[in-house]
Length: 522
Image (tube, rainbow, N blue to C red; front, side):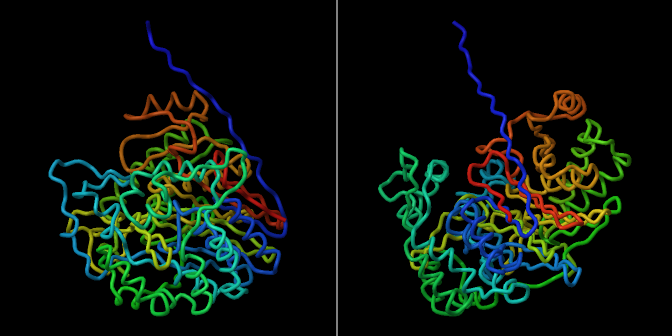
């Protein structure tokens, strides 16, 4: 008797949200509502982005948190300029490539970066995976330079939520269950997320329950009182260092004391007469700009809507760019699980902000004295020595974050970004093209089928693409596969986008299948 398989087909959509006074898009509805409340209280788009990000650190620990880093781009309407705050992670000064010996079987990493495998995956999880975090330094700098409300007020909603704990619904329960094998390997994460040896279960009646987060609210209180120095050179520092040392991390007092977030100009390029501003140079921003230029050359005359020829040119531009990115980029060659937030305010300011602790639950190391979950940013480095992105003490790694702002020729501004590792910049690349070349509304751009190219010959085609386009790509590309745009696994990144028209009208959208992602406006 021949076995049968069953399939379910879901057609998911989310209507775009519209407003005129302010808008927030994030990966969690509680964080979005915090950001919107900040706007209603008189804060600007930078304030809203910071408060939203802080809340995400509590309610979405599998994606980002205070033990990580990020990049924030803001368009300042009054000054008609785009600014960048950089606070990516940095290798501990004592790090060395020899800390990450390669496996002898020639296999690739177990995570999503396709580097050669390191023995025991020590660059992916555990103490040697932790890079020096920059998050608290970065948001403090952004608030001081460009915000209107005190950092203490922006922290307060997250502190109150930390007192309640991590909201547990079916999706949060599924996330903890999905990564339980990794979480149980380390006492800090095991004691919080798997308290009785099992993941927390969502309430069968649909009521929201909360998982306690020991010491995290107190940590946020200390940052309210002392600023970021509470972590780097203040009340929390000695205990943080003791916790790190006990785990086997190479982070020392020098690493924390000498970390600084920086203000810089973003990358700026022209694409068919549109202005594109993106983070860089250690982000995916340079690759985004290169891919857009390549696509512009390969596909000089776009049709009225994205057609098969456009998607084929997108795939080839992404393949060409990724080959160059992985071989040539990294701090050594330069002169000179992630979440995303977009915000807009009534004054015309616009923010694109990406923050991360890297993989789901970062290094899976939770510092018990502070309740902070630490990143696994060392995974961003190529473990092979001698390259521009190889491990070196004090070096910053090449990362995949790609917060982007764009200004169209007709005066529209858009903020776009995503989470999803190597899938981020291909997603941002296509959304920028949909908005710029084809003038799609945010509603249509968010629902437009996409492809993914993440550093290999394989091109993943969204099942939602028209069959004629999929067939054309399958005939003309050497390796393809068709996948649904689902929650888990996700094959196409998780984007957010906000667009402001010249008359001030706002339209926003977020990752469609997510039960948590939300856009709110007024």
